[in-house]
Structures are given as C-alpha cells and as structure tokens.
Amino acid sequence: MADQQMVRLLSESGFAGAHYARFEEALARYGISVLRGWLYSGYAFKLVASRGFDLKPHELELEELVRDSDLREELAMMTVARALPVFRQRALVAAGWRTDGGASIATYFMGACAYEFPNEYRRHRVQQKRWHRGQATEEITTEDRLMVRSVAEEVLGNLRVLQDLRDIGDPRTQAAVALTIDGYTQEEIQQMVDAKSIRAIEGLVYRWRTKAKQREERSFDG
Image 1: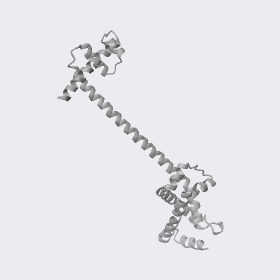
Image 2: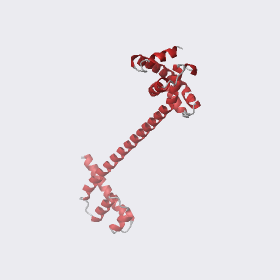
Image 3: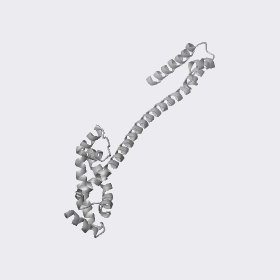
Image 4: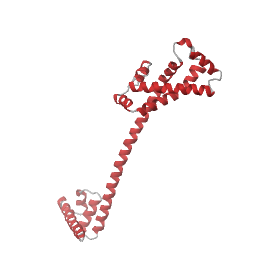
C-alpha cells in the first residue's frame, strides 16, 4: 500500500521533477548495492540463466568479480543506469507495476536490472576482448620495433662494410663481399664471379672478414 501511494504521488508530476529525482536516486543506490552482492556471490548469473539468458561465465570471470570491487561497482552502476529509464516507462508510465502483482517496487526494479544485466555483461566481455587485442598489438608493435632496430643496425653495419670495399684490392673479393651483403646465395655468387667452387667464395669472404676484424682491433687499441 505504501508503494501504491508513492506511485500515485509521483504520477501527479508525470514521474518527473524533484520528487521523482529523489525517488530514482534512492532506487539506484538500492539497485547498485543489491547487484554488487549478486555479482560477488555469482547469483546474478544464476538469476539471468533462469530467465533464459545463460551467460556461461568462466571460472576466471567469477574469480575476477570476487577479487575486483571496482569491476562489481562499474557493472552494477551501468546496469542500473540502463534499467532506470526502462523501469520508469514500463513500470510507472505504462502502469506495468500493480499492487496485486505480488512484487514491491524495489523487487520489480531488480527484475528490470536482471533483464538489462546480460547485455551489459556482454558489452563488458567485448571491451575485455578489445583490451586484450590491444595488449597483443602493443606486444607485436614492440617486437616490430626491435626488428626494425635490428635491421637498422644491420644496415649501418653493411654501410661500414661497403665503405671498406673500396680498400679491397682484389676485384673478385670485392664482388663476392658486395654480393654477400646484397643477399645472394653462394651458388649465385659463384656463377657471377666465375669462381671455381663455393668453397672458393667462402675463402674470399673469410679472408676479407679476417682482415677487417684485424683492422678494427688495431683501431680499438689505438
């Protein structure tokens, strides 16, 4: 009877204005408090499953809700925010709530929250997937940066090598080294410099590397 009288008074202002704002605020605080408890215990999922919305929460999701108070608060607030206008229209404006329906105003409102929760939780899951994809992309980007750095270092090294090519007196050795830097296989280099064998190409490049290393050591010691 108290609920009926309250709804009648609120209807006089068209379910708007200062009185309705205070009523809605109190209803929202109540809904958030109840939903937080439902999320902590996992009852929210059992309730919506009984109404045909089986979200099939993973064990890790349930553990996160127990552990993360901020997540419970966020989900409860968003669910209540979505339920309030639906409740106002259906329960009050369209007179969906009645005293002979067997439910109080607060219980009727929690029913509205139960219908809004599945959609809100699905949105949460989508956001989580996007976040994880973003993390994966960031890791890939980090790997790409490392790869670019590695390539850059290799290029700088090759530039130093190319500068040293001018000091190589033997044209065949110079060609073999340059072609090696350019990525040609030893078989291809053998044909291009008319070497007798692949071992001959290896020998040319090895002798040049040995001399280049000795020059670097002498430069470092100096």
